[in-house]
Each structure stands twice: as structure tokens, then as C-alpha cells.
Amino acid sequence: MIELAAVGVRHHAGPSVLRDVDLHVEEGELVVVAGATGAGKSTLLRLLNGSVPHSTGGHVTGEVRVAGRSLRTTHPRDMADLVGSVGQNPAHGFVTAYVESELAFGMEQQGVAPAAMRRRVEETLDLVGIADLRDRRLDTLSAGQQQRVAVGAVLTAGPRVLVLDEPTSALDPVGAEEVLATLARLVHDVGLTVVLAEHRLERVVQLADRVVHVREGRVTAGTPQEILPGTALAPPVVRLATALGWSPVPLSVRDARRRAAMAVIEPVGALGGAPAPAGPVLLRSRGTSVRHGRVDAVRSVDLDLAGGEVVALMGRNGSGKSSLLWALRGIGPRHAGTVDVRGQDPRDVAPTIARRLVGLVPQDVTDLLYLETVADECATSDRDAGVSAGTTAALLRTLVDDVDGATHPRDLSEGQRLALVLALTLAAPPRVLLLDEPTRGLDHDAKTSLVARLRDLARDGTAVVVATHDVELAADLADRVVLMAQGEIVADGPARAMLTGSPGFAPQIARIMAPRPWMRLADLYLGADQAP
Image 1 (cartoon, rainbow, N blue to C red):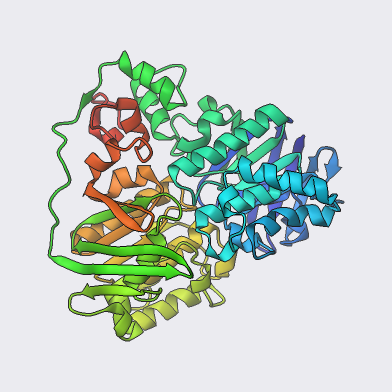
Image 2 (image 1 turned 180 degrees about the vertical axis):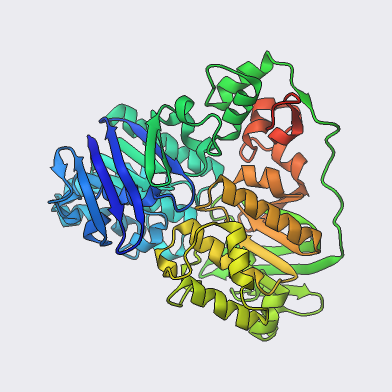
């Protein structure tokens, strides 16, 4: 179905992004593309629908064929019946205002008969679980809901190859399982070929026929058991199996539970609850409410955030997490309630003061980047924050390596852009730091650096809140978990108790070791010579 022979890609006058790539994908395979942030995963995906080089420019060598069609001579618009694509940020690809019309748009361009169009729309609404959203405006949906609509809009056109760039990055764990189960069903029952890039391999690796590892411009392909062990890509279940010498390596929680039941695994010391907050309450929210039109997004929330603690704000897509963060920052709407940060309301003070009270890194960081180069963004941030030159650039290097200061911010990968905005926010350290899905687009090493940086901020007395669907991040980082549903806080407690007691939001180790309260590899004694 897909053939790449000696393919190389170079953007403009820069270095090669991909070199000597040979890859063969059979019809009906589910292939996962993995690798570090900025390694070239998105470029590889864009080769498959012809947007590289036809839309992005650059120079491509070698040959790319999909179902026998050469991408060298076929324009992307002529591939629409064969390859469907969903990008990292689905909202950027929407062309209509409402869910149902977005699903129908691609078929309208293909001249599909109205009766067939209606049937496909109905099937797709049920297939991706968005029937209740059919009449909603796209700009009123949460990021996860938008992701499902984008997948559905591609499926209605009936492609033979589906290419997705981090399709579950904005989805809660339950929603991610539903979307991935849908993709697996399409692969097995319909024969659809699916190629997707993903950082959260714990969600998808058990469904993959093969993993394509992109590293330093080159690719290595093989089964998950061949590619993942011993790499930073490996999800917790693979790292556990490798440390304990299990062979074959299990890829699913189910298979790992069976192996763990026969193994002698001990915890590392006593596992208690989260430590008490290290400092005084820095932010106090009382009765905070947010409405979007007729929708009550946040309903009278009371929340205290103490210096020195890291809080994971969790919940299903559309539960109100993002709306609450924007209200606490003082930028988003707040229709009722008060927010007090050490005696001041961020909504009522000058922007230069507000940024030192509460910093917010939003889900979509692109709108915050408006200068021509990364270096310009960093230099402007240093001046606005009143810090020494080079401070922001140094912060950026702690999050991601090898970001050229001459690069336009919109040419960065999603993870690199997120890291840049985080560095801009931290240049003037706020008392309270709010992050909305900060690990979208970040690889394992970048996520490890982020965790270390946020822990350092907490030790320095900052109150840190991370709205996230990444349960592995919450297990590694959080002292406390606040769970939202339908705009309300429904649970609030120590991270260990909250995560190990939740079947939907439990990390892989917690699921494997249940009912014992272990949730990270660091909780387990795996032998003196075996590092988790």
C-alpha cells in the first residue's frame, strides 16, 4: 500500500530532516511512528499525502508511492480519495462552523449523492461517538471533542489510508481508548491502512502491527517487541518487562498482569500519601463560574492552591478544566466568584503584574507566538520580564535541544512550540503556574525535563497546576489530583490514592499491580542492577 524508496527530505536550505528512508507498509496494517520531538515524524506523515513537498516546499529525493500512485507527480488534491489526514491541531483543518457540516464537507467536494452522504454521516457519528455533538458549533467544543470530529470528517470520505498525527494527544484516557478501538476495528474489519504518530505509546502499542522509529533523520521498522525494549520510547509495561527479563515482552496490561501474578515483586520502602503542602495558600478561588453561551462550563468551584504543591487537574474532555484555568488566570470569562492571589485578583491588575501572579501555558500555544524567529521571541520575553539577556533561551534549552534561534516559531514541531511558550512564561516566574495539557507533542526525554523543571519550581514555592489527560505524567509529577466532571470538582485528594483508585485514570503500573497501591516503576524493587 505504501512504499518509500531512498527518500530524503530537506526543508529549504536547512539540514536534511529525513535521509535514505526505505519503508514498506502493507494494506490493512496499523503502523505507529515514534521518535523524539522534532525527529521528523510529522514530515514522514506529510510525505504520505503529498503535502511534502507540494504544500510545504523543500526538496524531496527518492520515490514515494501510495497504492501505486507516485507522490512526485500527483498533487495532494488528487490524493484525497486515497489518503485522509488529521494533523496535530485538528481545529486548524476545519473549514465549516458545525459538526455535521464538517463531516459532510469532504463528500460534497467528491460529489457524493445526498442519500449516501447522509448515511455515511450517521454511521460516522456513531463510529467515533459524537452523535450528541452533531448540532454543535466547532468553536464551542473541547480540544478532545474537536479531535474526534476531525477523525470523523476524514472517515466519511472513505479513504484507503488514514494518516494521523498524535490523534489521542487531546483525549482523556477513556476517549482515547474509544478512538483507538475504532481505528483498530477499521483496520481489522475494513482493511484500512492506518499510520499514526504518537508519543503516548502506552495507549496504542498493543494495537500496532509495526513501530517505525524515527531517529536522526533515519527510520527503523519492526514489531513493537523488536523496536521498543531498551529505548526511551518504551511505555511502562515494556520497561517493567525488560527490567524483569520477561520474554516475550507483553504489550498489554492484561498480558503483563498475568506475568506479574507469577513474579515476586516488592515495593521500594513504604508508600504513603502525598506530603503536606510546603507553603501557604497562594491562590484561593471561591464560587468561580464560567458560561459559554448557554453551557455552564464551570459551576461554582472552590479551590485552594498552596505553594510547593503540584496539582494534576483531570477529568473527561469537556469537564471544564481549560475554562477553569483561563478564569483563574484572569483572562478568560468569569461570570461569578472571586480569585485571590496573595491579596490581588489577576483580572484587575496590569498585565505585567498579572503575569507574575499567575502564568498560563494554554493548549494551543500558536497564537502566543507572533515574531519572526525563536531568537526574537526569547529576546522580547527577556525585555518584558526584566531579566538578563539569554534567560529565556537558556530555559528553552532545558526543555528541548537543538532549536535553532533563526527558525520561525510556526516551523517548529508542536512539542517545540509548547516548550518555547513555557520558557516565555517562566522568564518572569509567576507565583502560580497553570499548564493546560503541557505534554502534547513532547517525547519521553522532554517530558522528563519538564517534570524536573516543574518539581524545581514547586520546591522554590510555586503552586503548579497541570491540566492533563496524561496519567503517566500525573503519576510521576503530582502531589494531589483534582477531578472535574460537568464543570464541578467531584474529587480532590492525594495523587496515589486518587490514581490507583480510578480504573479510568490509573497509570499502567497501577493497573498491572492492582490492588496494591503501586503506580510507578520507581515504586518497585526490580533488582540492584536493574534501573526502572
